[in-house]
Length: 228
Ligand SMILES: *Cc1c(COP(=O)(O)O)cnc(C)c1O
Image 1 (cartoon, protein in one colour):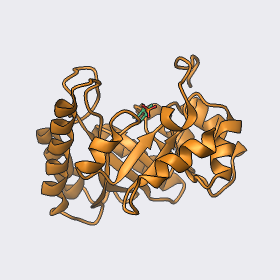
Image 2: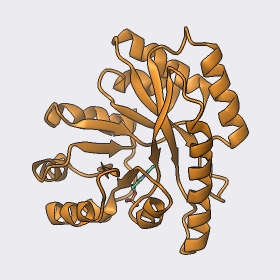
Image 3: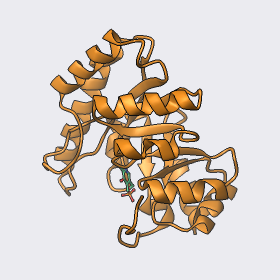
């Protein structure tokens, strides 16, 4: 089932849209099934779960961290994570840089922008984004081991397609504005928006990376307890 779901999803994507298979709460056997069907990029939300799964899959898997990352947990994933989607504070970015340095790596990051109506979703507003980018630019010596390769956002969880569209269009416009301000460690090429329920709208609005879980792996059980 997983490999068919994967093929079905991929068939709808043009070459410039990257598919992240969101495998949180799913067993390694499910990930292997997707791997054997050709999937190489997996997205996980929980540090403990990611750390447990990473050694059990082949080395050419690209692991994306898509959840809310706490600064004190960066050290557990810094040696292997290939993209961190939800960076929304300078403190977190500094910690990623510090841990990346220890492993002599440059870790790619996306800055998360708050686009949903809900108060609970994480992310920066435009003013905070602006401030953060200025600080990153002004402090080049600190931020040598991170590269911001774009933005990420999550739309409101609603059936109202117009609302979702408005939010994705807004994120695309922010992305386009800041794309022009390229610097050494700000090289925005990636716009991560769209999940199982709204990826078609997201692609219409200019998404270059979609994060799909349930459409590939089926419904999820509740959030695991006992994260690190
Ligand atoms: C869980 C999750 C997804 C995938 O959600 P689906 O609706 O199952 O596709 C995408 N992005 C983030 C940030 C998530 O937490």
